[in-house]
Length: 157
Image 1 (tube, one colour):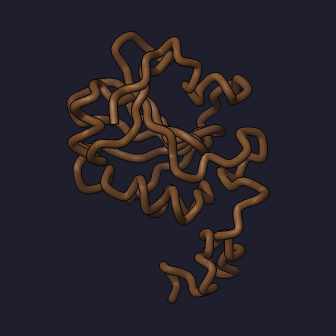
Image 2 (tube, one colour):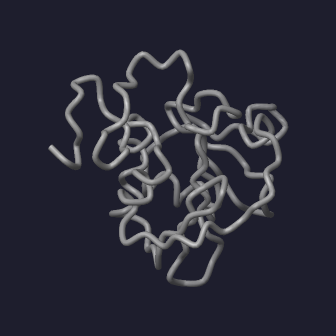
C-alpha cells in the first residue's frame, strides 16, 4: 500500500474532538498493562503488539486521551489513541514495525506519521470500540481487559 497523501482527507486525527491532554499519573511496566488500563480493543491490541518488540521504548505512561510511548533516544513519543497511533518518525519506521500498512502524515508535527487501527470505532465513545463491534466479548471482571468473544481473558485465563 502506498502512503496516503496528507491532503487526501483520511487522517483520523481530524475525526476526533480536540482533547486537552492531562497526565493521569500512571506509568506502566508494559504496553500490555497500558492496553488493559486504557481498555483497548482486542483487535487493536493485536495490531499494536509489535510496538513492544520492535520499538525502542523507554516507557509507557497514561494520558487522558492516549497512551504515551516514550523513546529511548528522546525523539517524539508515540501517542496511542483509541483509533490511531501517531508520532512515528518516518514511513520506514512504520513499515519496520507493522509491515506494509496504510499510513499517513500526522498533523501533530512536521515529518511525523501515523497509522489507523483496525478497530477505530467511534472517536467519541472513549473506549476505542465501535458500538457496532461484534467482536467485543465484554470486560474481564478481574482485570478489566477487553475480552475476546470466547469470554476467556487472555491475561487472567
